[in-house]
Amino acid sequence: MKKKPKIEMVVDLFGELSALPIPSSDAHMSKYQIFKKVNHYRKSESKEQRCKTCSNRRPKQFKDKRYNKCVLIGNSNSPATDIAKNHICDQYEEIMTIPENQMHLFEQPRFDGATYEKEFDQKRLGAQMYSVYDLMKDKRWRTLSEIAQITGYPEASISARLRDLRKERFGNHTVNRQRRVVPEANINNETGLFEYQLIIS
Image (cartoon, rainbow, N blue to C red; front, side, top):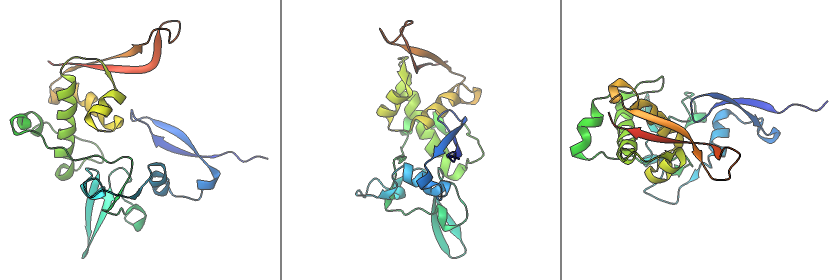
């Protein structure tokens, strides 16, 4: 009898669980190893772009030693989740600095979540919020991919910040969503691709 592929549950861009078949050749790998393989974790050729300068890095102190972890990989309290500061992966996210004259808009709102750590995440998520807000305030319709290409942030982060902008503590703004219309795409001229528009309150 042919064996069914092993199934790994992963979180998609919109925070939903989905099943991802793992090739039999990778069945022996841990989920941390699979993450590193899928995202091409490797030694960086740049001193500017590497784990050390990535906003997802989390330095952890244990006794007299300091370790580097990644918020996307998680922390197993073992070497399995250690990352090297001179490495990089496809999820690299540069730390953005908010202009002084805009700082008041994004310092006060408080983010939350199971993995949220104020010391590391407040400025990082605030910078993401500012970048998405500053781009989308022109009311133009854009897909997550288009926003990602301009801001440099992952689509998952952009989707989360757009959801945040709807919340009262982040301004209670209107974020519209619709299917992108493409001539001759199908009978209704619609695709499975969604685009978003921000209307400032």
